[in-house]
Image (cartoon, rainbow, N blue to C red; front, top):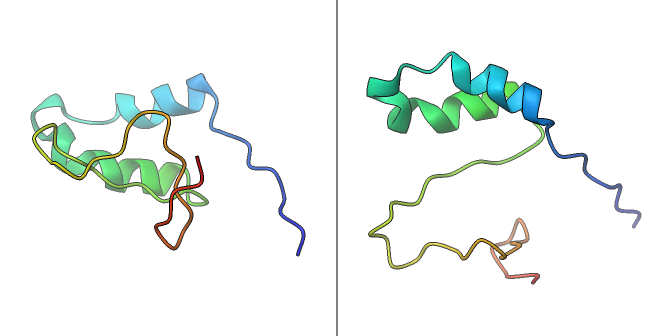
Length: 68
C-alpha cells in the first residue's frame, strides 16, 4: 500500500475559510466551515474542559490509534 503525502492547507486558504465565520457562532460553525474548505481532512472540536482532548503533538490514525 502506498501512502501519498498530505499537503496541509496554506495560511491564506485557512484565513479565507475562517474570515467568513461570524464570531458569535464560530464555535458551532468552525468544523463545518473547515470541512467544506478542506474536504480531504477530518475535523472535530474538543472543549478545553474535555478530559479526552489530544495534545498538540498527537497524530491520530483514522481508526483512533495514536501514531506519535
